[in-house]
Image 1 (cartoon, rainbow, N blue to C red):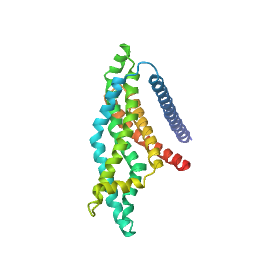
Image 2: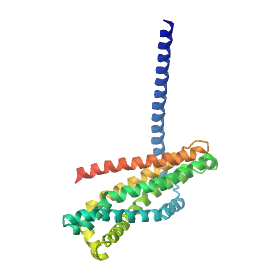
Image 3: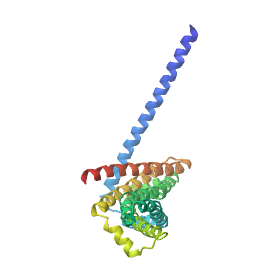
Image 4: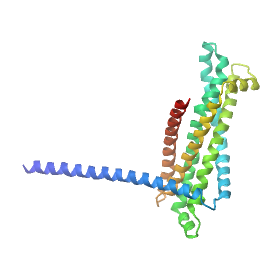
Length: 273
């Protein structure tokens, strides 16, 4: 009888511990969500307040664009090249090779260019922001800025968020253009198409409504990457390991949110067209 009572008490204790652990996880998640929205509110307030750091903003724009340009160039070229090489045999079977430039251009402009480029930028830019701000948090540079009457939110976070919001759409448009050039190179592997003719065929199938939604959602991609990268770095822990964790979690969360934003944008575009 005593063993049965002990077993029941043990099971009851395990259940209580699991319940407490689950409650703590739920509470921690809700706290993180609340902190994130407070972080967004602070960004909005500091953006429209006096003393916007234009010099730091332009420096961040240069850093984001200049450092990401080689990677975006390679990625965009490979996107167009691979899409053309894989699609051409299927179109040849149906006698629709002339549709290849338009198909590649629409695919790149609508979906592949923005999403893949944003994911590349999430890994390159998001992790960089998380690691940079995380290391500043660990070395107490952010606290030093607060003591010296300099707003770290306005100088470090707001400038990076708006620089990412502005530069990532430009990088996406550049990746689309480079991707179409890569597609032209892929079409000339087993064919002979002039550069001007290929581009005219490509853009003859592209409508304004193919371009506008892709550009609009690109700004949201940039904002998501900038906000998540800065949030993870700005709220990093005190230890040196927290820098790596901040960079890693920034990449994972930013990539996930980019895909979610793209899904929402596709649904909205489908309802409006």
